[in-house]
Picture (tube, rainbow, N blue to C red):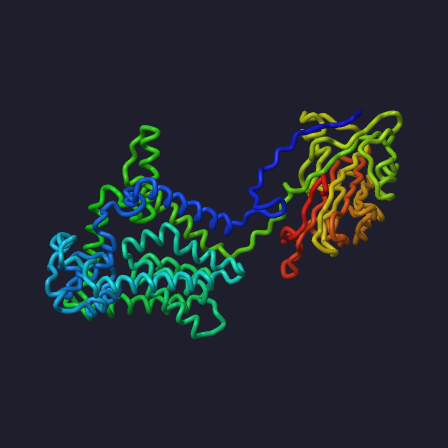
Length: 554
């Protein structure tokens, strides 16, 4: 028996069933459900005492950002009197809520930041008052409805699963943490989603509202302003300018409702810089760099290292910059054809005495529609390889006899001159269809023609390889320039039209005959389906959808 066995390691697949992989959306949903289950079990096991380990450590200050921000509107001097961090538009929002609180209640509030903290748990605590508590309930309802509504619009293509995604979005850690804090960032979520969804709408009104939505979101919480790079990426410079103007209005106009006036901007910047410079240790959830710092501190404990908080903050800035650059390529197509999912069984090598046209028994059985597990040829028994050889291209011999799987991985070793290999696999098609394939019996180097005659009429390559699907031979191309020795025209598969191959519904048997002769410096074949983009022909192809490959069809 003459046979080469090479163990092929293939990456494991995460599956819902044996025919379908988990999509990123499904992974996200399952992960969310799993995390919620862990949270519930932890709370049950601890009788609720572990809740503060998942959320803010101060168990008496739930909804702090919401309730304190209303308190800080007393006296209409949020920056000079209370050192609030929110932008002016957010303060205007809370000032409106402040006006909905009865004067009999707000008149008892303190007039400084420290004194407001001492109100917790007293009869003046806003969480114990009906008016302010109902405002918080309405805030939560509006946030949840906004997130659900915009999530469903963003995931229309997901069909019935969009409701599951909306559920997972509402119960994600970030949203739950934001609700526990009462953070106005949650109002930015639907506004940012509206901008992403409608910034390129065909309706001018929706496009303008999208720009306004982004400006309002940035007016609430600064961070959303970074989404403006999407307008630059779209080369929609006029919309970007209008959005900046909306942002300036959202920044300056609210200041006229407060006693600090435009000077409030100076006070606000001072508060921001003082706060960022005073923090030596991060708060949980207090920004991307702080999340990295929390993870880094855990690594420090494991490895015994000690890196400063600034190191993690710098890492956060670097990662944010990388993500910002990546945002310019979010909608760009990545043309790639997967090939690690194409397995082959090989039989050979069989001596052909230099006569590459010789038909051996597998080729004859292929025409009859039945293949055997082994063949006896000239007194030698050949069996199909026990292990799979994986790839859209199989190379038996490389230029200069570089190491391959078929020459013992030794440079300079020539694997079996004047021999023939047969390769077999199966393709499953969900329907009867004609599919474009990149097919080649050889790939020419672009430097020279030192590999025998090119573009031999009636052949894929002068060594005469053949390709069969369901017993039917696939005809080679009609070469535009037979026996070409000049500039390449259509000699290699990636710059000629794909071969159109009919597939029946179900499993389709593929057989490749790959012979070699003395003049072939490279011995190989390529066989892979491709999806051609008519707008960008040539190499711009993607994986053809719906097809499966196997050497053991079920």
